[in-house]
Image 1 (tube, helix red, strand yellow):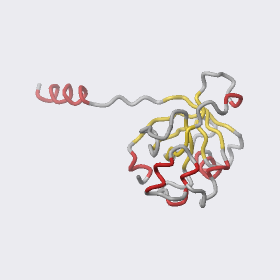
Image 2: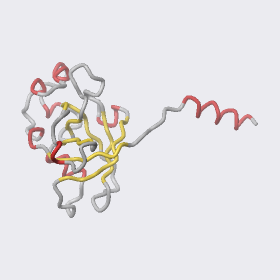
Image 3: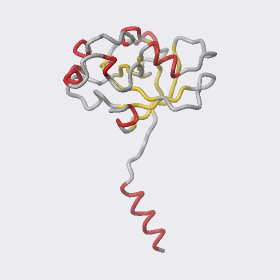
Length: 150
């Protein structure tokens, strides 16, 4: 009885975790470690991290729709799990540094598909070497910032 009550209380306060299906593409603009964070929409991060390479998760950085200057998405950490055959058993996390709203519409066959872009190195980390594709579908879930070292 007590166990059931504890489980019921815990589940009432648990945050639901939802995974979104997204299309992930490569973007060389995030690959230069010397690029200033003042050049992306999440430029407020430059107060603590002046260059891409100063981010704890570099080179695992990228952009997503909605990451505007004052958004809580800036600096957020996301888990990506690619669809087979590109699935890797190791977890992959990246830090959001840029808003890509309205870009990459042509990359997706469906205009309702959400597109994320990540550095070339991050894309290589996301997909294993035998997965030779320019874009991959993945499940995206926001995770605690500490998983990206933030």
